[in-house]
Image (cartoon, rainbow, N blue to C red):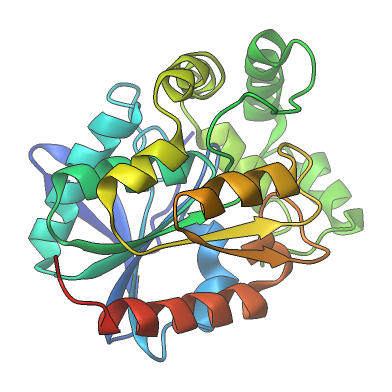
Length: 274
């Protein structure tokens, strides 16, 4: 499914990557989750760009970057390391939502340009995940259906009656879902479960030793908030809970999440460089 870029297409070792930049100041890289795009951070960016150089990237297999290979976190991180090098930015605060958190941590392991980390809406592993039964089979089927209907005129008309108003385009989430590579479903639901069981994100945070903020939604339907809070706190991360928000608190409470990021950024800047 073709998309129109809202930023620049950078060539990173032969891979075309969609990158959007806003504002000036301390560099802040925002990484979306599965079936997302740079547009998931449109409203969050409004609260950050006055003090930050906000960098948003469509991950491989998503949005205007596209592609169908190199979709795992380590491969994604290698491309992002090239993006940071191309932009010439240092001491970057990297924030990843959901699957983007895996990519953020993988990036921190290979790039000395990463100064601090933010995990948004993601538990350390799937040990207490509450995904719908049969998700590995049903989700690819649902994705195929979304790709068929996302741009139909009747779907756009019906979107006017949707309750959520998180995006300027009421069909943004459906369009992003339709643009996502089908292979991502296996990467997130099957391969990721095995990988995190072997090396959970909280263990990765502990091993990296970088300043880390975790932002959780109290009403996350995928992960138990209290269990997630306890596990990240145990490895020294600062954990903040956004009341009334779900798995994507930056969509539901962009002002509050922007404030948390600004405060943490100031703290991270004051920390000595390792």
